[in-house]
Length: 389
Image 1: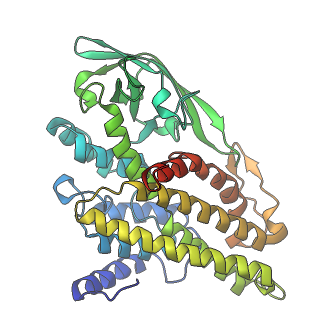
Image 2: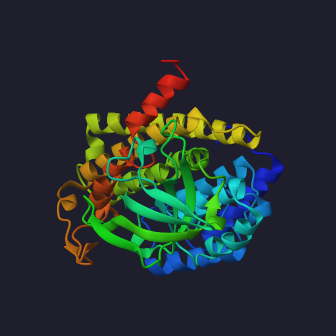
């Protein structure tokens, strides 16, 4: 860190590194195998560390910003995820803590915390992606339920999801941001159809979701009717702050240096242009990490992240994209073959282990410029809120 640790912070840092050390040795930057990852996730649940960003009152750790940073850094250095992952932990969980009713906070967090209920996000639609306020999926109130008809697109992992948090339109009067309502859907409803979309990386992680007379109880509405835009902005702030990718970028830097140690003879690291590119991205990552720490400190004092979340998202995605480019460049011709079987990478790989997934990571990283709000939208937000343009 860029500051001296207090005694309690140093003790916590020692504890989390000992915890991580039970699973991975320092310097292990290649992603763990599925069996180790499963044991790791169960250990997080057993320690109740799987929702380290949640308030303690709602089942989280209640850790300070410094402790969250230390935990992410310790995990990132050895390629272990800092939580059990998924949109339940990262996105709808914090929204339930901040906007949910007592009944909703009692019903939904347990399934999120133990990983038994998977969630997906119903935001983007054909014709309403970056301009999300133009969404048209309609929710008609019928007594104690809403009847929903419409379509969502680019819905990540919808094929595995049990629930969806969804933006719907309950009124078309006034500003287009008005009349939007935030609802929680059951993905097992017979009116929901999930159609695969195969991504640039060849995998099936994206989907088109068709909603045909889907029934949702009013008690599964987050916030008041017509106030969904306020809830959505809160969720996007959490999402964009999490898209800084600092720990992941640190890991990718570790992979690059691991590659340097593994290769013999002339390497890209001997090239002055390549080294200059690597040094440049390292400087930008240092600046991004400092900005993230400052944002976490301000959040701990009760301030909303605000425009900083757009800055973190923008710079974080640009840095991780540059790092994936450098990794493909470092892998040389080993990065060219990308065998696929049924939309999953083949086990019959070519080349050293460190470079086997780099082409797939490079391809999927292209979408980071769009996910969570396109980079162009983030630039517009900063121009308006910071520069007054």
